[in-house]
Length: 431
Image (tube, rainbow, N blue to C red; front, side):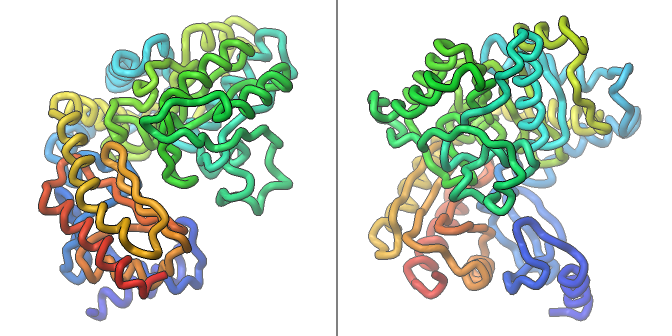
């Protein structure tokens, strides 16, 4: 390691707090010099194949000419302007495109800063909607165990209260209702016993419940679980029966990751409110959006205080809007369905040998998501270094080693990722 690299990492260790980490953690941090395609180049020149898409978002890979150009051209006009009382073409074009491609009846878009904020917005929309309907007691939420919806206070209150990452804050968070994580796997039908507890909660408490919030079909950071679209369809019907809004958190699943453009499409349902983020800008800038039906937006807008009470400073940033619009165009102009299907097949084949490893509890694949669930948590310090030594960037958490590569990845690169997972887990020295 050069003196420059050592100085960089020393400064990082001394002053920077990384996500879900300690300031005195022994888990290594690696300095990235550049990124292009599906490769990360470290400061020491080592290249890694990215198996994470930078936490789901870099679906086109890195340093994409079309996305670079979108930002460069927008810079010539303006980098930012407030959205209070002003508007601009990038925001208008982006919102029109989002309305066009998302499930029917979602006709109003509120642009936000990040996925967690879009969930906060969705929850506030639901509460304000019921206030406008003169049902102010409807302020609680139902979510699913093993769910994850973000790290801000409102979003934390609908994350799994026991196995989630936020149990430390349990006395501060609003108390909500939790239904069991769906036991019906993707591809199976949803039997009455699978949805019985959700139905019971709705039947008993619907007068105090504003919305059911869930991740459609794929539960992400709460456990990387895939469940039956039939459960989602029945959950939507229950919400309609008991007059409860449905919020679909598509932050991780949106823009093709599950094999459909949005995971709600697996069940052919349309939510009342939908959150999107992560790959919205192709991983270039932080941005999210909360979409809702005209019924929701009109009810809020036509009743006191005659406005939705939220307003981020950087809402509808023109640079982010421009690159998001180009990212969507780039995705839709490609044969993304076939690419995701091919990745699914290759992950199925490449991760299958892991089933024979004694420490492996399950291997599952859906769309461009491959998961190896272990029987015990990994040793992050050891396994992270081992993956880097193998020339891949894979970031496990807990018992889960998972892949969600950019859609542009080639077969040979997927094989390298899968071989690294198998060899390192089979070695058994990193648990």
